Length: 125
Image (cartoon, rainbow, N blue to C red; front, side):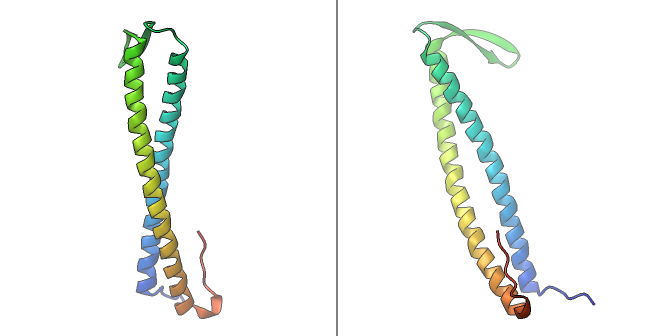
């Protein structure tokens, strides 16, 4: 005999799964941003060791383009600023999603206890 999950509980479990999926996608995107930010910082550190006016080369599409250190440094500083902003935004979203997940897990645990009191029915993240 198969016992059906109450619709209210099923709805909350679906929401819980969706929030977990959303958090996982966000963390993946945040990791990409943080990785790029580390790379930009590393390049900026290397550039800082070069004398002013040094000719450097950068890749643009399939081309290697000759440019000066200051131009590249300005572009990278701008990119760094954007990446830092995005990273902070992702961090705020992550905190919000984690709070929502905790709240929903509590609600699901309450429903489990309501519908399945004998099993103690609690889930953990």
